[in-house]
Length: 253
Image 1: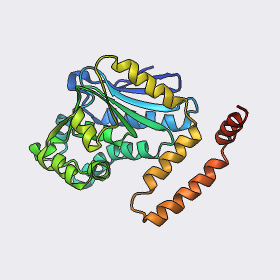
Image 2 (image 1 turned 90 degrees about the horizontal axis):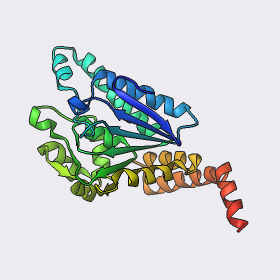
Image 3 (image 1 turned 90 degrees about the vertical axis):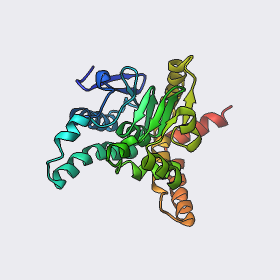
């Protein structure tokens, strides 16, 4: 099954969304953003979907926003432009709120909004030759929404270096600062990615949902409040059928 801007495949519990503008380095335009939102909404409601994978067609993951579309918007009102930007922001928010793992599989370049899309995912699996960066400042633009996620991922000093200078990182550098989760060698890349993702698809859905909820809700809480939240999540986890079945199976050994 496919759409114009996003190719869609559901197999083995893994919903793969492939950005499909390779001739434009998978630049994000309004149609692509809309289709991503639709598929993420579908993923939340579809019990067959255990993991969502986002990747790019061709040589690159995503080069960021469609510059031609951005240029057309310069004469629009601030309210109209804010609403336009918010549509991509809603994709970021949906990824975080989705009670299922969202994995970015990055080959080639992930730049600007494309790097932001990867940053919004729960896990980032990077090809050893991939690169990551926010070069908007060199075009007089600001990666404004991404900052909400970036400073959480890498800290203020690294975040400012990335958005303030437009410095582009290699995969190894991105791993070192916490922008990506794992770097995978070119040899056997697809097989390694499949093994990781299939393992995630086999995990307890209730446990994954609770992990995501707690992980993203601890931001801004005091240590005591974070521990109290953990106690509540712990209590909920103990009552899930997945946990009861796993413990019963373990005790039978």
